[in-house]
Length: 73
Image (cartoon, rainbow, N blue to C red; front, top):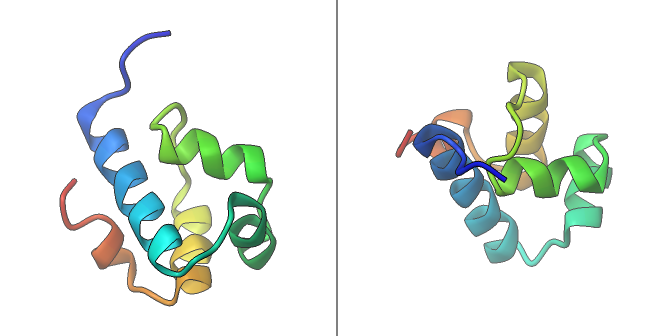
């Protein structure tokens, strides 16, 4: 598989960091954000683009601001 673009990797790393800090599993974050757990994993690995709508739902589920997630992008 190709190496993910740096911006997608940075966003995925931020989501993973906040998820783990919140002690959430992929499954629980997906449930809170109304997304599929596999999708959360793909986003964290930078394998797929995340829509703005999904990003907002993830941020709300993690109780952070979207700008916190994209700060290093």
